[in-house]
Structures are given as structure tokens and as C-alpha cells.
Length: 368
Image (cartoon, rainbow, N blue to C red; front, side):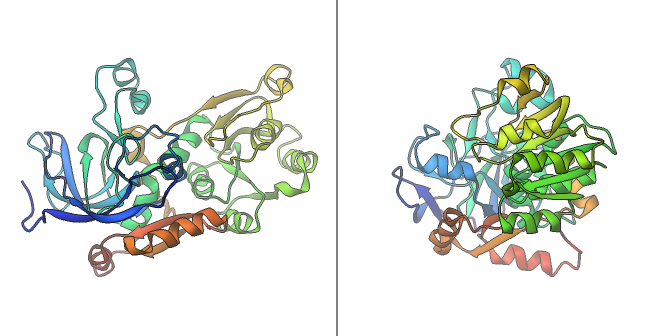
């Protein structure tokens, strides 16, 4: 089943050569749907740190590849096996495409399924992404948007939101316990602060940029600490509010070289640090691992079920995403420049279809 008037060609921003700007040009609309595929008319696509890794060749991406693995839009066609989606549904697109369903991770706990080593990744590996007017999506990894969640909020959540939400959940804390978010004023961090609050946790936000500290406060962190005061003072400030022990867990979303060491140092003995940031090296003082028994674990994006739960949390608690919106692929270069400048507050997005945004605003619903 499909909507009428799907064109043969569309505009897309592709990586056609590593370490070169995106090429914005016409490409075929991907109408060759598999049984589990959705074709969406993209409303909003978001830029992520991983997009820079793709364009630099780090992710071993086959070229050409349409960029962006964070997208949201409206279903315009569905595969033959699909029963849970229909044309007209508003969806958040998942990054995974064609997970194998047979490896140990696919067959294991549901919240390990995103680690499928045989999967394709939209905009990253063997599948095109969402910097395009239309995109092919695996329905098993897509999520319907609650009525209150807008496209502009949903697109950045497809990776950034899913990633930091799972990090907070993996911390395994109970309501009333203390968690810290290191890098709390970034694209992931400001969401982590809000998710932690929504789950009933007390939040320490740590950042080293004026813009990041401002966004941390806006997100509602209980304690906001400027990392530029130095590790000793950061630790001191954390201990003041945690009975001298440190927080029960920390989620690190900062690429700064010392961020992981800081994360461990402000976490109480036997506590957990969830490492999400992806610097070239993660260097942890041995004293933290051995003398203080800090448990460090990595975390990737969320599973499909976690992503759908996250959207419910967003709708219920009014989680907001700080976005920098650009209109159409003609402003792609401006978006990339802002991201590279270090002055980005929150997430950068491209509005791909103004009509879908207009329709949302005319719906009369109060959206986040």
C-alpha cells in the first residue's frame, strides 16, 4: 500500500568522497521496499557526531551514502508483511536496518538486539539515511510518534535521545538517588538531564562551556558544576550534596580527554559509570577501577522497545530538545559549519518538508 504521487527522483545530501562536503543532488526515490520496509516522507533529519565519523571514513562506509541516521517523517508506503504501521502514520526512524534476527544478540535479551553485528545502519553502513526527501526504514526499528511529540523533537531522539536514555536506564538507579551527567550541556547531555529527572533521579550536571552550563540549568539539573574549576573542586562540590560519597552513577557523554577520569572520580565507591562518548582513547586511572571498584560499561543506542518507551517518557514529561533548525538541504553547509565551530547549543536539524511541520502546528495539539 502506498500514497499516490510518489516521485521517481528526490533531493539528497550524500557523502560521495571522504573528507569532502556533502553533495546535494538528485537521486532515485527508494521504492524497492522489502516485506518489513516503510517508505517515509522525511519531515526532519538531524546531524549527529557519528555523521562526521562517516564523512571522514572512520566507519568504513561504502560510498555514495545519504547522510543522517536521525530522522522522522510520515509513512507513504508499507511493505507486504507490515501490519503495525499504515500510510499516514508519523514515525521516528530507527538507525538499524535489516538486523539478522539470528545472531546471539538478536536472540538474546531484547535490549542487546541493537548490537547485531550483521545489521546495516542507516546513514552509516550499507544503508542510506535521512538527509533526503524520502527514506526507506525498517519497520521493526521504527516507532510511532505519540500525538504530543513533534517531528522536530523526534528526529534528534532517533539516535541522541535513544543513546542517552539507555545510558540513564543502564545506570540502574532508584528514585531519589544521585546521578551525574558529564557533558550535560551538549546534544546528548541536556536530554540525559531531563530523562534522569523524569525517572525520579537527582541530577548533577557537569560541563565546561558557558553555553553548556546554561543548557544544563535550563534542563533542570539540581546541581550545575563548571568543570573548569578543576577536578579537585568538582569532586568537592559533588560530595557536598552526596554525604561525602559521590553520586551513585555517572553517564559520560563528553569527548574531553579527562572526562572519563572525572566521571569515575565523582562516582562513589562500587558505583557505575556508563561511557557513551567516543574519543579515540578512554583512559581510566587504575585506582578508580581497582582501589575504588568503579564499574565502567559502554552503551550503544537503545533497543526498539526502549526507544518506544523513551517516546512515551518524552510525551508524558514534556522533554524538550534544544535544536538549531535549518531549512532544507540548501543550508546543509551552514549546519555543518555551526557544528564544527563548537558553538552549537543542542542539536542541529534540517527541516526537509515544511508542509509536514505546518500540518503539525495546525493540528491544535500542544506538542513538545
